[in-house]
Length: 205
Length: 205
Length: 205
Image 1 (cartoon, chains in turn red, green, blue):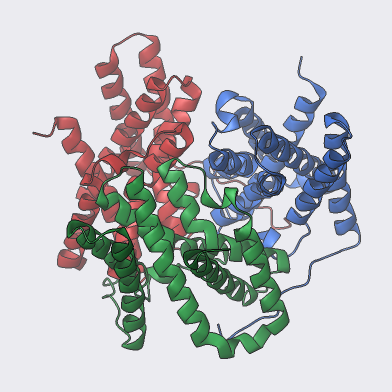
Image 2: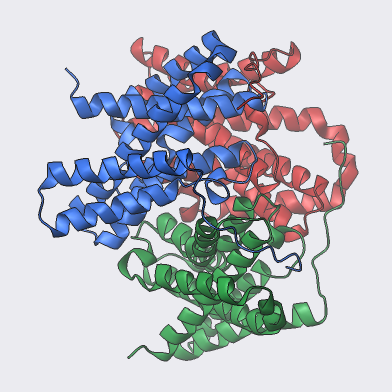
């Protein structure tokens, strides 16, 4: 029986893969290309984290991740345009994924003995770097660099993790509060269209 | 004396480097840029594989790879447009490279004790990821995601490797049959213009 | 008290981060995106080097690098367009960074027991790969592949390092002469507009 966290992780992986596959489909990728983009979106952040931490990438010990991305591809092929109507559902799934990936990244880094500032960076990489790889593959400027409160939600979640840990709230509560804070920041940012300031253009560069 | 496999590997590296250098030349890269793109195309896939597997990248123990890419650059500079007439020759060389790199990637991963599904992914990365890096460097959407049966040939070669291993055919025959299957799939796909279906565009994304 | 080399390294990191942040600002990145591009420009080369060498990325043991990039962001936000007038200053800083990063990369690789040809490649990656990551993030063809004598200065610096080592000049002199050679090559190339030949376009590819 999978645990509750494993079920959530599966949902998050699925949602990340869907986001990659849908953007690939908008660029006329073939099935294989869409699958690779979906898989890279789902596992790319955690892979970069694990390479930096010097451990075996997490997905190489469990075939659930490539299988999950394959199911996401089948779903997009079968449902196609109908998926648009599920936009809000996927947004929720995607935000759950972001929260879980961030908490998992922070926790794994701390277990390996790194200081908190490294853990916060690793949590943000786990949550957000997959989307950067996706956007490089489809040859677009990474979305998270320009438009959305996304990685910042990871950073805030990491800081909340640090605060809870400082207050010795216990691992379960710390991870729960941290994950919820990522989720809430992301939701509020999208609902109220909160953006970071854009850096003034410097055309002469 | 180099072995037969080493000779084939040199040919494959050479062909991969040529493909990178030619695409770089179409984008007005200077000699150095073209060299880097050629070298990255040739060794990029194996490097990503080795980073994921946690071993020293293969090219760091043998200067033949940077030298081989240098020779490829000299050839393109000297022959220039005349190379177009050798298009079919390079296609054969490139397909030989793809076959060898795939088999080498699968074999190396199995030796390190990983399961077959990881080995098939690593074989495909070894064969196809160099071309993805090349296309990112020249700022194009990776070709293998959109147009060609390329990485799929690697996946099929990996599955054939698995089948032969399951039938206990012995290492030499397993690797030979696997490599030939990559080569044949690639040739048939190009000859009969076999493509994967394109994922239906979802412009509203 | 920081040593003289640490002060120079801080200046180099700062200059690299500024170059990333300014190019990001020209593409309308938000503050977070600009920060990530700046940080990646500053630490990207050394990170790739350390992953290839199989050691913990250098910046994960010292928070000075993310802090330094943050200061660079604040400076660009505060000074904005006025920075254009400091163009020559930043060019000098950037060249100092390039020299230091190259020498650090060569030295670190040799200490780990790799041969000189690997060390020269690693020195060039340390100096130049951050700029490649920057240009991939802002979705441009990497500048160093097309227009400038940049990575070639690193290669020459590596060769000078090798020559000095061959002449047993001692570590301090070797590193000093090598670093100065990178700096001088870069300055002369820009002053006299020295470029590498462009590879002839092959439009039929």
